[in-house]
Every structure is written in structure tokens, then in C-alpha cells.
Image (cartoon, rainbow, N blue to C red; front, side, top):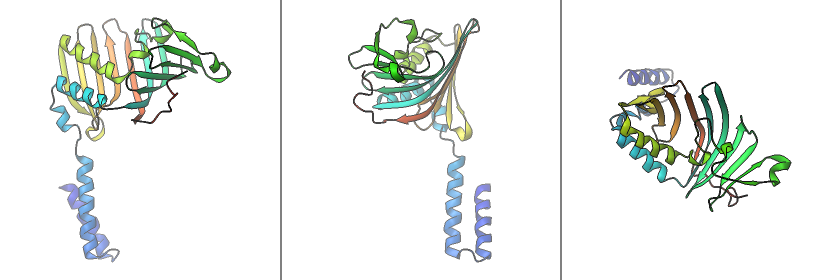
Length: 239
């Protein structure tokens, strides 16, 4: 109601000074009131009422409907005294094509792909880009400090693994988060780990994840600059 009163006051002042006519003042006030109501509405309200299983099921369904996506992936992970800080451009296209370019951090400038035939290929940028090599799936250069391969870093794999971890969870919660409920938070407290994952309330794409192990190891992932269903060139996932 306070937003509506404010809108009416502004429209009344504009009308009294002759800046707009009576009809325009009414239309303008109604438009402002509608915009104010939309701004204060929480898009995560309905989602917060879902059970964790239903939330993940809906997120998985949304991701399965995508043909492709691309994003900036920022990773910070610790394991004992070791620390990994990296940023990637991560690209995915059905059925299971992956391309990841290392923007900063370990192996900066490298690009690795999983082709349609399942082969994993890697190369450096610049003059060395002509010397692509085939990598075995157990090559340690493909893994982060928590032993996750780039091949298993797509959203569908991550969400499916989270759904499995719900079975061993001791405490789970779903709640609104972010500015005006723009995010939805899923927290899982399990045996030996705690994790918090933030979703975009509009489409349930992943935005951020934090996880802690009992031994003190920590992981943080941020997904940004997200593009859904981008068009890739035919040879984008091939070299």
C-alpha cells in the first residue's frame, strides 16, 4: 500500500504543475504501482514451499530441457594446505559435449573438450594450439583438488549427485535468498559434509555453491555470465 500511495503522490504533483494531464496522471500512477508491486514480489516464494526432492526434480527437469549453455565458472577449493583458484569458460551441448577453457589459474590458456565420440582432447592457445593431444579420462590434469573431472562438472551431473546425497542428509532446508527473493537456497547437512547451493529463482540454474568437509576442506563455485541455449559452431566441440 505504501508504494501505491507514493505513486499517487508523484502523479498528483505532476498533474498539479501541468506537466501531465489528468488521464495521463492516472495511467502513470497505475503503471508505477504495478512496477513497484512486481519489484517487491518474491519470485522464490513458491519455490521455498517445495520439498528439497521436488526442488531438485524441478531443477533437473529445467536443465534437461536445455539444448546448450555457457557460463563463467569460478572455482576456489582447498585440500589440506593446498589451494586451487581458477576461472573457466564452461560450455555444454547435448547430448554430452563439453568444452572448458582455463581463463586463470592452473594450466591457464588451456582448452579441453569432450567430443561427440567420447574422446577427450586438450590443447594450449596461441601457436601451440595446433598441437592437440588426446587425454585419458584418469589424467590428473582433468581433475580439481576434490577429484572432480571437468567431464562431470555440468549442471545435470551436479544436480543428480545432490539428489543422491539427500538420502544421507541429517538436515535439509529450502529458503528464499538474495535481493527480493531472486535466489533460492538449498542447504544440506550430511555425514562428513555441509553444502549450500543457490539457484536462480527464475529458471533454477545454478548460481553458487559452497561445501565444507569435516576435515576443514572447503569448496566454492560461482557461475556467472550465463547464456542459455547459445548457438555453437559445428566444430566448437571438436579439434
